[in-house]
Amino acid sequence: MLKHLLVANDFSPAWPRLEAWLRQMPALGCRKVTLAYVIEAGYTQAPELSHREHYEKQLAEAAESLANDTGLAVDWTVRIGAVAPELVAAAGEANADTLVAGSQGYGRLRRFLLGDSVLDLARLADRPLLLVPVHGDAAQLQDRPCRPLLATDGSDAAAGAEAAFLDLLPNCGKGVVVSVGRWDERSEAAPERERLQAHIEALAARAGEAAFDVELVGQGRPSEEIARVAADRDADLIVIGRRGRNPITDLLLGSTAEAVCRGSDRPVLMVPAP
Image (cartoon, rainbow, N blue to C red):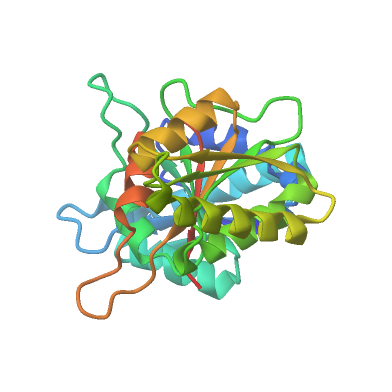
């Protein structure tokens, strides 16, 4: 997990913020980065199509700078087409294990804006997607081990996120697992809490010597409680599951996963259901 990243670069003013975060990724086991820029085919004025060499030069310079600063192996690719599908295809061709994109952060009205391309990418991605806030007071990794937070409900849809969290833990400081349920002190609600406790105990057994704390929240809006615990625990990274392909409608994030992405001021790693 996070060993080879396919990183979307749009040459916007947000790139230096994303680049700064990437410089810290070797601490999480990253060894290779592929930078990708997509020229949108069909753009009405389409000056980019005749400027491909310009973007190739910019990507090559960005790759060289990142490689020199981090020791990572860095390459790059320029694609033509629709942004999200091309990034997904590029990740597959590069055999990258994770996609990375910058998200726009909080606006003045405190509404989180993913942007159409990033939201499409989140819905289409066939592998984990790391969304890094690039505006506002987004959390950055400090001079200490990363503190990951896993949000899980113990369902099959969370299995990929749980595996990713356990994979990250050996390179991290103490993590935290949070689960938001629908129970209170009533006896009829006890089975759900007991199921989650047993599920998390099984996760702890799989984690071995890597430790994490646990917070079981009986009531509340899941996305808000996840954000609250992430802030209380000073988490650097939220790991959450994403629903897989719906054969009738489309690719769906799931309401909680999308709400977490829209409302988080720190990086979110979304992992598809197995």
